[in-house]
Amino acid sequence: MDVSWDPDRRARRIVFVLAAVGVCLIALGGAVGSLWVVGIGVWLFIAAVMTDLVRRP
Image (cartoon, rainbow, N blue to C red):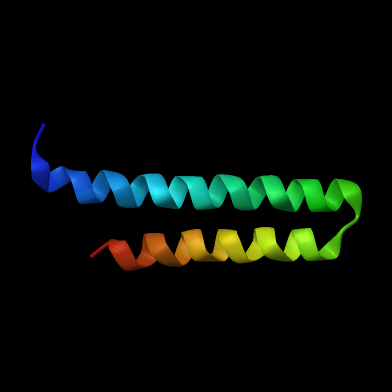
């Protein structure tokens, strides 16, 4: 395994985890009717998108 690809894999994994947790929280908040849970999920999803945009050249 090449060491130069390790940071890219780590960043991709962080983006995937942030997006997955964000979408799960949005769905959970919508099902329960809790607006603050939806808000946290939206901010996590925004963080995933911004991280993905910043890490790509």
